Length: 177
Image 1 (cartoon, helix red, strand yellow):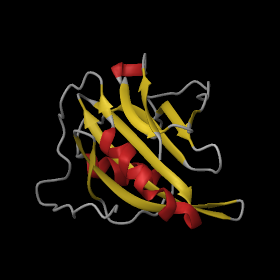
Image 2 (spheres, helix red, strand yellow):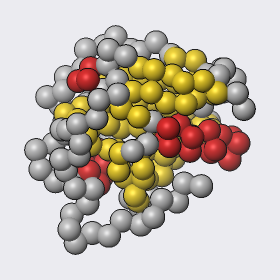
Image 3 (tube, one colour):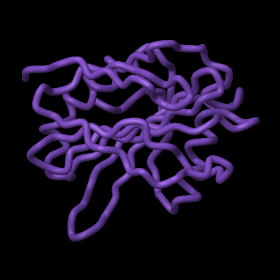
Image 4 (cartoon, helix red, strand yellow):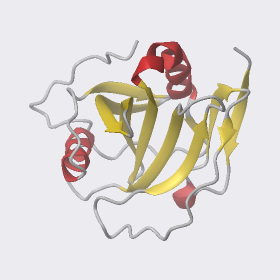
């Protein structure tokens, strides 16, 4: 697979980043709807990268981190608020950032989409990454998603300010292989 480095510049909240992506993937134009970040369920779109041949998407959104709790609690809260049934929350690296991830399946238009959701917090900014592909194509794209997550680098990281999980909660190892 031929790759290239994608650079997101001038992102909101200083969330510029780079990632190694397939050379033929596209940077999809972002929605222009106004986002009300006072709504705790809302995230602002940062980047959408997509394969040219199928609904295979790597999406980055963000919002201000919550005032209390942990990254895993925030992931569970957002999933619950959106009516998503998620699998176990696990450790999930996002480049150099420590984060959490989980599995979910989205059904629509007769297609079952497998989704790996990743949350990471950096300097009071909550990143939400979605790696989504039709269930039938997941195994063919899993290595690409693993590469995208492993090579994600914030241009100006600020450092984590929130725990990944409450002190009494042990997170399982990442099951994304």
